[in-house]
Image (tube, rainbow, N blue to C red; front, side):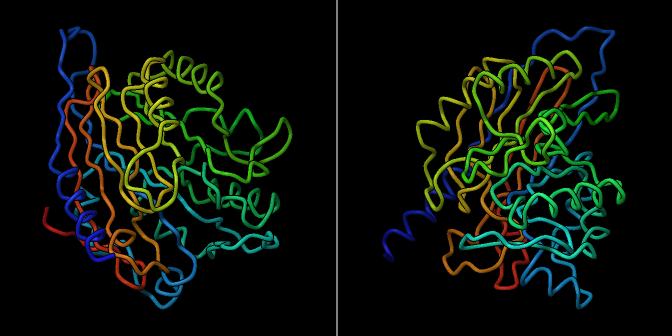
Length: 313
């Protein structure tokens, strides 16, 4: 067990030292040439330990607050439902955060993905309540909605003249969380639909990045399904692919000059005892009209309350 942990720690260090650069092509003088800096956080769960910390006046984002403030766009996976209503489903782990966390979330995050296996933990009513509360808090979201159409609609954020489209998809069961024609829920990952969504997003934005919820939990290496889908998305026009769900970081890949970061691991999450689960990545990504020009990861150590702190790489 000790040898395996040491091996995984070494793997973390090796993976985080790989900083691929997307080759730049000729620039059209009529298009924006500014660089937009994005930061991506992994799984954020604001119930349980983090929720209690916030209720007592604490801030689990605080150790990273100054770093996050340097980004133009801050994106995270919201791994819980934010609501007061609903009933917990019959599953091992259910996460419901108080709506009181919303002001803090909004102050540190610009967009959240709802496409995950905990967004529906308290049923459709709680999910609908969360959508309403996010809208009232002016908290942009993607990968979920009040119906299928909204769940698959890209969130387009404009910074410095550059339009960036974010799409979110869940691949982890139960599929009962999936949005329907007239039912709230998350966007489910079906290859043909994902390709179509990316192609449509390309017509509206300069940059398209899917944020995936996929893979096997606690596995540091992406599986074949992840690799096939990631490459399919880039072939369809995605500029990068970012993932979460395994609760550990996974390997990375460059395909056709575009980065694939299979899993960022956890960011704000308690309840784990292993160093692999309590070491996540914060992904820094620079994008221009030409795509992703550079990226790097920063380690985050997560304490027993679920609060991340920066680690020197």
